[in-house]
Figure (tube, rainbow, N blue to C red):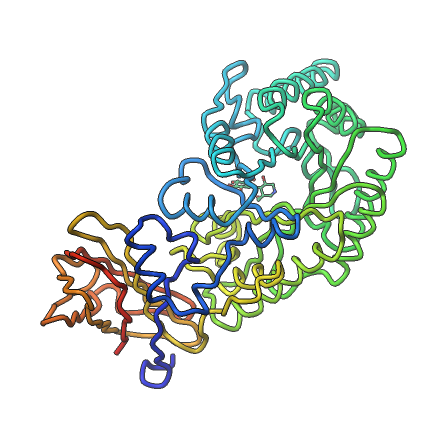
Length: 460
Ligand code: 9MR
């Protein structure tokens, strides 16, 4: 563990892209006055993507779409995929009794934020209601159940969703069909049947087949390729192929662009639908740098093929990722850390989309970032995030000088004193340790009048 002495560098960082922080007029003013140019120039990912006519999306959880999570989801992405809310088990937990609340909420949020929605997913072997999986059905019944489900769900959102993942994960790793409720009951043609039903229910939605471990050229992606080729030849309605891209650090397939191109050459679109890149925890600066390179490689493979419409990340923050619970000991797979600080991967995505003015967070340093999280007529709430990359701390002290007569009234997760204009805060007993690749925050309330500029924070 390197010490504060050898690695300390002090910077004022907002911790979040500017767009995500523009929640109050006073905050905007303060940031514009004082944020360094390199950070003030950050452009939201969705603006960069829009300039290229591409999608940059994220999977979301409806109940979290408020506060910072909602701000980032709304300001940085131009497409949303419900992570779970549209799956059969979510929408019809009991036969004939429906729960559309979360799905509706996400679609409403997307429309309010000018975002497109990717419906996910209609026909899958997983996350089905138990009444469906435990039932014993004739082929005719199964066929009716599938058609009715598609007609109902696609019909409900007709004209509002850009895209549907109609069939999900149809193949085994060796390229044979996965033995599922659908395959076993209806044969391989359940796929054509599902696509046909979806087209009938919403002729304007783009219809996809989606799978994982099909990013590079391999037996599974070749089986998918052959299927799509034959569906096209038969005139079955299929518009695109989704490559999920649940990847492992340092293992982006070298044939990814070639694979995307071969699908595009069949006359279908391609989308990266569930991108995340997991690593063994804890993360450190070398792993985060590798991850940034991996994210950039995936983005570049997509952007090199005109029919690749863009990428969706499977959760934008490490606090909302499926990885840690599924792969114990692994995580840190998304572009933002658990405290919503953008990671090098975020900057890599921005750069791949043409954002040339962003500066990656300083490496080999611990930094303190001050932000005003809310402000009212005489008071405000502030936060300081201390983050380390390539360094670590076992205790810390953060200080700053208020420039306009502000007065601290209360602090939490640190002990703070103010003497004259100078505020000094030391770690609480439980949050002195800041690991390499990690961060801690503390908060405070203060009073202000006239103006409330953001001060530079010194660590030491
Ligand atoms: O992110 C989803 C997670 O919350 C669920 O627990 C999990 C159950 O399988 O499904 C996750 O999403 C999956 C997606 O729907 C299809 N591709 C794989 C994703 C990760 O498991």
